[in-house]
Length: 468
Image (cartoon, rainbow, N blue to C red):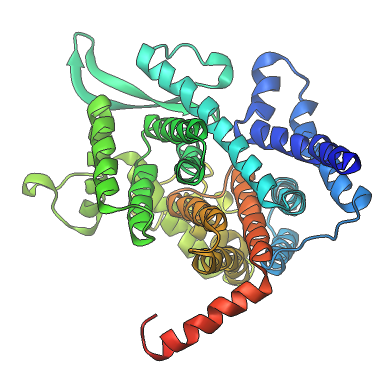
């Protein structure tokens, strides 16, 4: 008994604890902020993810546990191979190789390491709580900054301000009142909205999944602060993604009608507390004028420069993909084509080198048909596995069903915001994708083959009768 307890302690200190600390430091961006704002050596940023090698060594070498390759791994490997091939043929090999290096260090490395460290439901739950701790830190600082109006204080880098501002509709003696868009610990407002949005469903599902009242309250606070952080970035794309996520939760029967009313009420309260957000969201309708439609009052409203620029970047990426359909132009290389291809679109002439501003069009332009198929397939396999676990575990293992629901929503939140954002700050995507893959692997193993076969056998008569 004592030996077993000693082994558990060793596993926690040599595997779990380092992994939890690294996940927290990477997701809060403290791995970058501590050297940038607090004088730590710049090497600290690289040492943080490198520290995951210790728990990986413990799992594979000391404990002699087998290497885990999730079902999506072949597609991940194919995607990386396409990146390598497209790098070879890129117009600027040096820069493409640098981008490829980021894919391997912030992508493949995190994916392989995390899927082999997170092996049990207990470890998965702890990692989720590390992410919720990050949500509290990331949301609290900008919330305090907005409430106090202390926009000249970045609070140690946790509450950075972007250069972007927008009119609130109010007028003072100095002219139009403008609202800065808060960028939190990331330093880029749209990306901050995206990474905090992914934390919202984790907090909500932990609120429903925990038995302790204290942990329920803590999960609710984490979800609320993450949502508040997302709102204070004043991202139109994140607002659309959040609305779609709520609709999806209704279809998944995670939200009952009475609870949906509560969500709507909270949304109204946020807009009342920050009426400038309403002013920002109203501008979404101007997109219709690009297609000849009339907006409010029958008058055509011209879309702002940001909207015209993003649509131009997307269309340019589509045209680049059309001209390089097999393996694309190389990782990170679209920006060198963006200005040239924007000239014939007629919405806005892009100045300088611009990214695609769309996850899908950007990957298609840079990795071609093979790359975008591999990318979508690795996500599709993982989401399918999670949905299958959700179906099989319903009524049998509520804890596993909760994990599956959580990461389906996390991935779909990222994929929805990806319509408007390219693959940048990719460590956030690959970390969440890795944890989602680990969740799919763990939950399938916990259910076991007999349970899966039993549920499938139960479904056959229902399928034959047209019930499911």
